[in-house]
Image 1 (cartoon, rainbow, N blue to C red):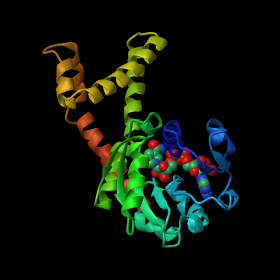
Image 2: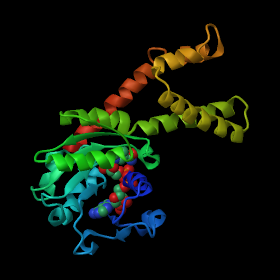
Image 3: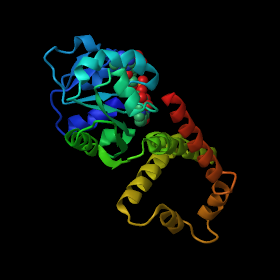
Amino acid sequence: MGGAMLEGWLERGAREVVVVEPHADAMAGFRGRVTACADAASVPKDFRPGAIVLATKPQQAEAALPAFAAMAGADALVLSIMAGKTAGGVAAMLGGAARVVRAMPNTPAAVRQGFTCAFAGPGVTPNQRELADALLTAIGEVAWVEDEAMIDPVTAVSGGGPAYVFLLAELLEQAAIEQGLPPDLARRMARRTVSGSGALLAASDLDAAQLRRNVTSPKGTTEQALRVLMAANAWPRTMSEAIAAATRRSRELGG
Ligand SMILES: NC(=O)c1ccc[n+]([C@@H]2O[C@H](COP(=O)([O-])OP(=O)(O)OC[C@H]3O[C@@H](n4cnc5c(N)ncnc54)[C@H](OP(=O)(O)O)[C@@H]3O)[C@@H](O)[C@H]2O)c1
């Protein structure tokens, strides 16, 4: 996820970026565009970042964060995208003085089509909030929430949401093959149907339900498919259960 955001920022002209990433191979796509360090101790001593983005897995936070405490201080903006980890908890792992904006982005950030929900933790200054907003707006749309608890369902819906949409593309492709279409055609069709529908949704003022109805002629083929998908125990129920499960997991990760 950190790489997706970085891709978006570099495309917008970000300069003087230092990335701490233990795996050199994960940095292959960024060679020559950023300074890569294998650990916090290798960051140039005179580097004073305006913003520090924390993008390790939540389970790695406790081991990873203390090494950044000196760098974080109270002047730099700390932007944490770790699922579950509260702004206060992250500040504590950084020694207590850090000013933390907790954000939940998603991977379309790589093509600057992301959606991020953000929460400003204790002590975040208006300038730091503005910087966070500028960074996040550079990679898509941003919404700020004043209640941190909202970040858990946000994580379930928009943080993980691209995975559910990509699953739809996978399943459409499989179903097309099952109906006898050649795999190449099935793949092209499924990808373009999902990405084209997303583009139409983005371009349209109509809500999703109306766009769906526009495809559904009475007594037609789509109506037959939707009868299966929209049955009470099908997509409406599984989507609701899936989002509830992810929301629970986000709360658990917070400890
Ligand atoms: N994936 C998403 O779509 C998404 C969306 C929203 C938010 N997030 C959040 O973004 C974070 C990263 O998720 P991800 O899926 O991108 O995970 P990921 O691919 O595993 O990225 C985390 C990277 O941090 C590295 N790392 C581990 N310890 C480190 C340390 N001490 N210093 C610096 N880097 C260290 C990891 O290396 P190792 O491989 O050795 O562990 C890994 O390369 C998570 O907290 C997640 O909740 C993800």
